[in-house]
Length: 229
Image 1 (cartoon, helix red, strand yellow):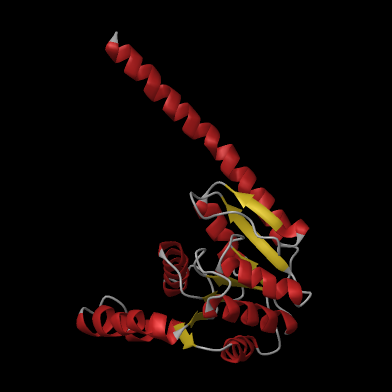
Image 2: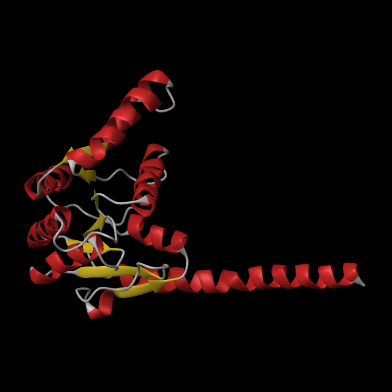
C-alpha cells in the first residue's frame, strides 16, 4: 500500500513537470512578442536595496538618462533600487523604459517609471534572463548582490563560450568592482589559469555616465544594432 501511494505521488510530480512546459513556453512567447518590438536597449542591473539618496541610485538615473538621449532604450528588472533609478532616468528623458518583473521575497515590486505597455511579469528566472540577453545591446552593472552577480556572470559565460555575440559589459563603480576585477585577473587567470588572459577584456570598469556612453558608442559605431541571438 505504501509503495502504491509513493508511486502515485511520483507520477503526479512527473505529470506536473510535463504541464509546466506549457507555462514556460507561454512566458517565452509572450516575452518574445513584446520585446521584439522595443528597439535597441541597454540593460541596467544593480541592487534592489539601494535607496534614492544613495550616490549609485543617482548615478544609475544619470546613466539611463544619458543613454536614452543617445537613442537606446533601458531595460531593468522592474523593481526598486537601482532598477527604479534606471527606469526613472529613461522615463524622465522620454525614452523607452522596460521592466522585466519577477516576484521575490521582501524586495521585488514593480516601480512606477516603467512604460505601461512594456512591463512584463515572469515566474521563471531563466526565462527572464533570456530576455535580458537576447534584447540587450549592452549590460550596465551597478553595485548589487547575488542576483546582480548571477546576471553578470551569465552574460560573461555566454560570450566567452561563443553562444552569443559579444556586447559591452560595463561595471560601474571602481570602489565596488575593483576587488573582483583583481581576483579575476590574478587568481582566475594568472595563478590558476582557469580563464584565458583575454577574457578579462570582456569587462569595462568605469565611474561616470559619459564613460558608459563612450563605450557603447565606440562598440556600435553607426548603431548597427540587432538582437543578440
